[in-house]
Image 1 (tube, rainbow, N blue to C red):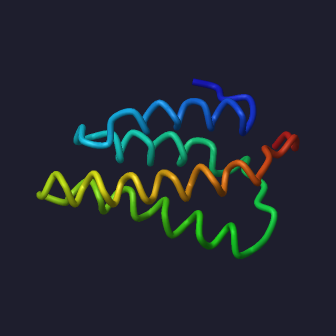
Image 2 (image 1 turned 90 degrees about the horizontal axis):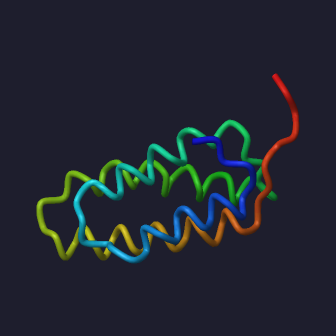
Image 3 (image 1 turned 60 degrees about the horizontal axis):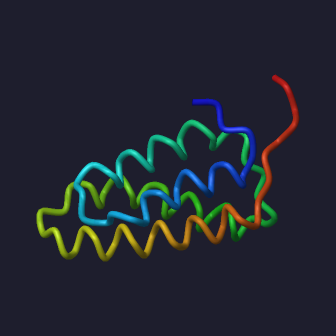
Length: 95
């Protein structure tokens, strides 16, 4: 899946906001973000740091045995990631 810009990425991630309780969704979001990470341009080092922290957290969330804790942490991290992504853009540089 070739994601063209941050608007498209946001729309894809918003679909996961419809179901916080399905195990596996946190890992799916983690994988999507891993794919686009090299082309995201953050507005500040603080945004970059927070994004990376929450990106790593998604993988840890997947291992939580309690479904309520899973859904709560997944919801919190996904919302914060969406807010960060809305303030970023994709690089136009070609490697």
